[in-house]
Length: 405
Image (cartoon, rainbow, N blue to C red; front, side, top):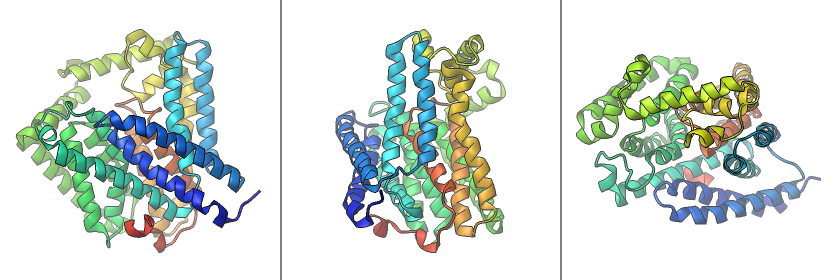
């Protein structure tokens, strides 16, 4: 059954509108729990609309994403058979189901790269809204060097901005016509990320930029590397010479280098704790390497997650869980590398974006448990979407105004 596009058009517009509200509310929950209740209502409406859209169209878009997510969900559900706490296990599973199902519904009406750009614009709009509120209403807290703790969770705020920052880096490099506005938004987001004091907020975008620069358009490789180094040097200078920035992030970067190159002599309590948590998680994995000890088993024994996606999944679901979650990365890398060799420059740029996005997520996974976050699940959906697209044109670089009409 395939329905005429006109009949599903209003419902598709509804899904896009709900998606915009969902992204905005998801970001704003980082600074106020009030928006969490509104987000639940929007999420339910979005899932319902997406479900009816699939019924009307007679097919499910993103079947590979459905397969990946369903397979990993089955692994998580199976682990409930041997988990030490069914209650904690269900909390972990439900935390994964929410971004997985919501993302599946969001991508249903997406058609081509213009549709992808529209969803990307929603992410950027949500990020700019979050940053604008942070700067105008909570500037005193944000710029005090206190990492924004008194207003919200700085790590959650940073994580909300990562995907929009990736998009803005991509567009700033490729879209000359709208480079000034993209650069302005990127600067705004970068300022907020810096003052959250999150080291992942610096390292992960840098890795994304570096990978994309190396992959994309060798003609401008030297120029882009020079600009990247220059921007990194400027940010580094500001971080270590502005007192508030040094208090928020500078000294934490110094501690990070000590931890990376001499972990046995780590001095920052958070780094020492994270190292020990990873070791504890790996010890749990060694005790049951094939299937782990059950989802959220680590939280049951230690009262906290392991702060590392790899060790968390290994401890919870063993090798089976790691394979069921990360096989999609291997698939996407293989497909994108082969695909980009036979595509035109515009098409190839999307492949380069997806590869850089996946690498950035792999780096992020070393410092956080991300399998149940919207950022990670949505990134996988976008990468899979790009692997299925072989044709586009220059018109696919739609501007904000046209996309949001």
